[in-house]
Image 1 (cartoon, rainbow, N blue to C red):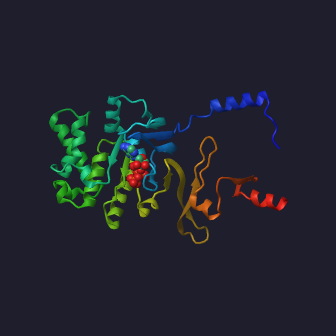
Image 2 (tube, rainbow, N blue to C red):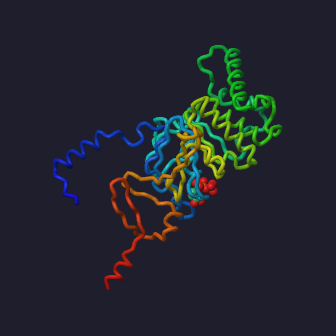
Image 3 (cartoon, protein in one colour):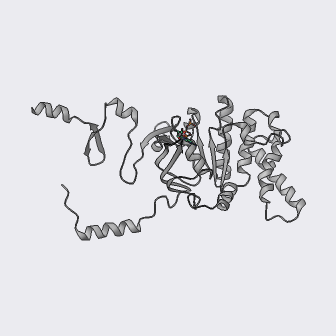
Length: 330
Ligand SMILES: Nc1ncnc2c1ncn2[C@@H]1O[C@H](COP(=O)(O)OP(=O)(O)OP(=O)(O)O)[C@@H](O)[C@H]1O
């Protein structure tokens, strides 16, 4: 049984709320009730409907979801290419709703790198791999701490060489995109996206145009970027193989984050063998709203209303059986 809170209880609660750290205070990406509405020909489409997402610095994670669920809309916002209609979005301490055109340009140049699905969209066709990777450095006059044109050019060549080497495409340095395979082009594209040392690397279906063997190499390149350079990586993918290789996969449904799968490596105490254990979680928003996976609710015929019971260590959610009870009463 619950009793009504006293005034002193309410004052204590308000004090506790004020001293609690703000939502996402320690995250690299914070999306808080993010909304994006598109209007076309008088019709409104709510692509994002109050999406919450936190991504910690150094994570490598995948975003999945049915076609039209809002993945690309979210990626375009995080890339600084589109602005949300409402809510809050912060990346590396920058407020994506309050940026001037100049802030946005600097954000795209310094904070975030992007790899698109279409290999042709990532690279300039008339430049070699090395020239493509060097371009963002030239446009930003980097490395800024090296004095003298020649010394700077040498430093650039060195950085480009290191990145192509790290991503396993050093042999492509003097080739133009049409002289490389799709997989090589995507690895060079990752080097272009990384060359200005962004905090965040975003990739929208980067393996969509590639066969599974090549897709594996591309995924390995993202893992290398994450592990060797500490870059936070968010990949939108339909590729189940990619989604099952990352530690965290977040599913988007109808413009909201719905469930997420976390994978941990566990060691069997008896055999000493390592195994990856995956567990599915539902998202609980700050108002306490929970979205149950459609396959769970369908399996138990749950609709409109469910029965809840608070147990000492869990909450039971059962199909609504009031109709049956009432018919028994009659
Ligand atoms: N510029 C736009 N104008 C109008 N509607 C848009 C626009 N961009 C996206 N939408 C709509 O917003 C919704 C979400 O689209 P979005 O491209 O983000 O989905 P997605 O999950 O990336 O899909 P896919 O996997 O097919 O790429 C869809 O209903 C789409 O039609």
